Amino acid sequence: MVLVFAEATNGKFKKAAHEVVTYGAKTAAALGTECVALTLGDVTDAGDLGRFGASKVYNLSAPELATFDGSVYTAAIAGAARQLGAKVIILLHNSTGKNLVGRLAARLDAGSVPGANAIPSTDGGFSVRKSVFSGKAIADVSINTDYKVISLSGNSIPVEESGSAVSVESISVDLPAAKTKVLETKRAEGITPLPEAELVVSGGRGLKGPENWGVIQDLADALGATTACSRPVADVGWRPHHEHVGQTGVAIRPNLYIAAGISGAIQHLAGVNSSKTIVVINKDPEAPFFKAADYGVVADLFDVLPRLTEAIKAHKAG
Amino acid sequence: MKMLVCVSKTPETTTKIQLNGDHSDLDYSGVNYIMNPYDEWYALVRALELKEAAGGSVTILNVGPADNDAVIRKGLAIGADDAIRVDATGGGSLFIAKQIAAQAKAGGYDIIWFGKETIDYNGSEVGAMVAELLDVAYVGEASHLEMNGTTATVTRDIEGGIEIVEVSTPFAISAAKGMAEQRIPNMRGIMMAKRKPLNVVAAEDAAATTSVKSYELPPAKTAVKLIDPENMEELVRLLHEEAKVI
Ligand SMILES: Cc1cc2nc3c(=O)[nH]c(=O)nc-3n(C[C@H](O)[C@H](O)[C@H](O)COP(=O)(O)OP(=O)(O)OC[C@H]3O[C@@H](n4cnc5c(N)ncnc54)[C@H](O)[C@@H]3O)c2cc1C
Image (cartoon, rainbow over all chains, first blue to last red; front, side):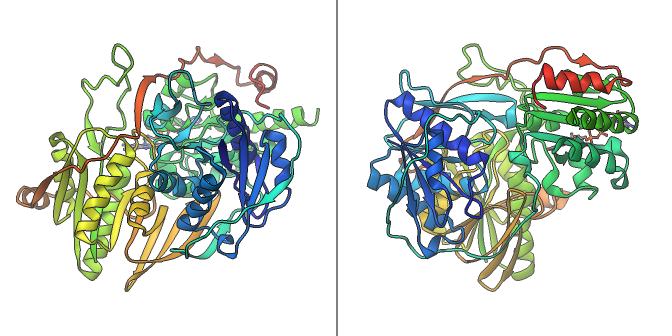
């Protein structure tokens, strides 16, 4: 059996949860077994996960699960897996997942693949592909143990509906005391976080200064995109650190990445070259980024970005 | 505060990745190595700052072959007191975590530091494994830490925001950007590093739970389509009709 941990944010499931359930259902199909979803804490509409292929949804609610603690969540997920007889455990490779994959693997003495980006291959063993070197290469990793733990990179596979809503069953597991105490959680409202974003508009040193970011923001607003930046821009404080993408920043794989005033250094490319479509706007025709781009515009970004924004608005207005 | 900083050796960030003949491994010829940036810039430096503020010790730990000693010496040059190398090659994440946990248990450390991930395998899992094996708290992708006695207030990065948590020693933590600023070793540090102890110990028995079967390179991009800067309507049309991303 495949057990998917479907994480909810403030009680609701986002697209990433639908992706991970879709992934679990496809993995179960490859193994000829069923996929069940586990939800933790108070959630609404858990049964809806059935639409993405979960044959059953379990919910574990306990006061200890109200805030995140790695040990408590690990006990919950590993306990549910043992109780249900699930040998493959799948979760998201997001901030929660990164706190859990290693713990689950250690607890179950399992092989794990963090940051998978394709459905496991089951011919001649069990192996999962993941990107390595921040996207410069892909490794096919074999798991050699009975229990298997996989975390899925966001935006790696399309969400697919393959079923209908199912009933939700309660489950109970003994939970330990928390080892961390959450004092405060702060999230920017209304903006899709970079790792989950499908559309990203990014600016580099070519923007010349933080006061010029309006041209990036206007395009992002017109598209409904999330903004990002190159490392030097975050280092000098023109933009917040969490916007820094690349080998030593956030690695992203959106459907569309628009880069303006970014030269395309190898460390920058490493974190963005898994994007499905890349548009590069740079006034230097020799900028290395053009080699990694699908579409390029050789021009001054201060002329082109406002024009592109208007064209997007016109397109949206139909 | 007795601290252990776990470091790994990774290819330098400008490395062009190439594969060997049968794609079973990378072609390592001509590759230069560095200490994994997250380990060096953030974990090690913050540990040194805590020691400078409140006393204690900073021990570097690496699980790897003798080739890794240069990277370990760099950590000593930046300011760590001593180092341990568990002599092993490969083994996978859980194997490595078991080696670290064994050393951590023997040494009785208050804080066990990691970088948020290695820039080669991009795993982000060893720190949490060690925490589970030792049954201690773990905070992943931490961008800020303040100590108050044996209690730490830690900021960790979450999607689109931050979470502030409190943990007590002993705990494990992985450091992200924001935790500290890179330090360049000076001449005196480099000279002193040569005399600091680097203890090599044998690895414990542990199974490899994963192994890399093969590598491949991402598909090559087709040549860029250049768009007339005066005609952004054409770019929008292509994004809509050809790339189908808007
Ligand atoms: C260990 C290490 C790790 C690193 N990690 C990262 C990382 O994770 N992410 C990252 O981004 N970088 C990283 N870097 C830095 C990287 O090497 C580059 O220095 C950086 O990406 C360059 O940023 P940039 O493209 O914004 O600036 P620049 O290289 O200065 O490029 C600016 C570009 O803007 C163009 N431009 C200027 N004005 C205009 C205009 N008016 N209109 C159009 N175009 C214009 C220029 O032609 C130029 O191509 C790392 C470096 C090291 C050593």
